[in-house]
Length: 323
Length: 262
Image 1 (cartoon, each protein chain N blue to C red):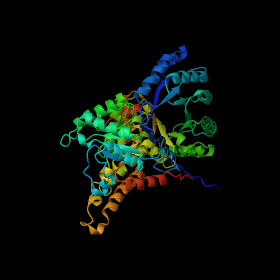
Image 2 (tube, rainbow over the protein chains, first blue to last red):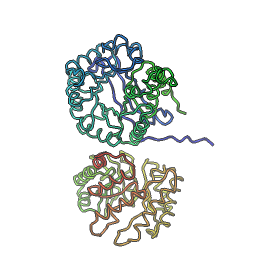
Image 3 (cartoon, rainbow over the protein chains, first blue to last red):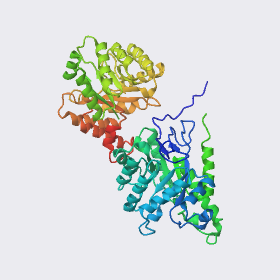
Image 4 (tube, rainbow over the protein chains, first blue to last red):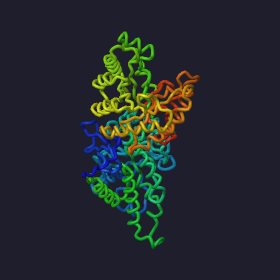
């Protein structure tokens, strides 16, 4: 008797979001990506279609970041030149996209003007051909000014801009509507707020295929399991037809992984923990691979070696395992 | 919770008159209004006293589909009328209904399979509605076995354990709830369940209160669908809240709105 293989049937798919725009599409990118679109749990090729490969974006800042030496040494000489920094990430380290973090806009820090921030984004756009993800300094009022200016100056580039949050989503959503960009909807590790924020954004008439979810993650050892379970619930909801949870998911892996003491502490301080750089790389790569399994489509990362390991894991996970 | 709007039914005077005059307006208005209310399928019943039921069914299906993309629930005791309707349905329909009598099963199940339709099966035979849960379940089992026999996917079978008005057969209400619970254990995957909800309050006072109270109770026992008044705002709210409390849908502040617009 033939064995009847039972498949998990999904009622719906994860939504798809396109990042970047080529010259023909009104932008200047030489490559664009579509993320999301799965009709099964992550990498369950045997249950449905895993439509698009997750992508890895490497982080570039507009000021010299306060990163450990194990990270900065890989960007020697370019940390104050965002364009060259981005180029190095793409050409040497294989970044699929560039994540521009406008930390310099912070009013208590460099307090850069919206024009200065726009110039940085333009510099990166000129330097690389991959799509850009741009976020501000996470001070609401300043970000509303900065990101609106970036959205306007880069109209047509189909950027991914963040972060829209429940108490502050209108200004960025409107800018994305008018200048045709995508928005990152960030919720504080809360599936209910995640869903509600997506509803609020779509109520402003931004289509669902222009929204990416940032569920807020914790790094390995620092609450990653909360993020994991929320991402799982969102994916299950999406597959059951809940459109307001069906957007692809972005994870701020680099930022959270490198905050961990285990990724930073020196070997002199903890001789039993082994080599400092290996630890950092593994902390970031393991955080990334766990979140890939939970359904991440866009990973924002820092260390070139962690990026390499993660991209290799993605290659293997994308191999068809259907039967 | 699938709300199947009950209003396109020749039992109501405006639809009856529309059928006589072949005036699509009242039918189409109700189609749109019920969808706005929260219906995600529309019951279509030509009502009593129509000479050519097949022709009337075809006309109702046609004019409804002109304004609505919702699946239709073709409601008649005349399988010929249902089949004429099925032929022109643009989306998979629901056949409403067959009893558990063998001669009806042999017509209804193959018809559902042929047209890719779902099927509502009533837990009764020609002797009428059973008094208790056990007899209802025996009929439910006949229907489940028929789905297997004729190749109807179990999730396309809706079993209706038949509720009576609270002022006529008060003792039936708890029996139906128990039947709903048990139906879910008859097969894996389980068949779906449906009720003609408004029947529970026929000729009673404060009908909406009885309808929505019973809806909440029935949902907790495993009710998947209800042929109901989709424009009873309070009823729809109970259905929306019920889905949240049964963890069938992830909570968000706009849960009522999402129920109505999904």
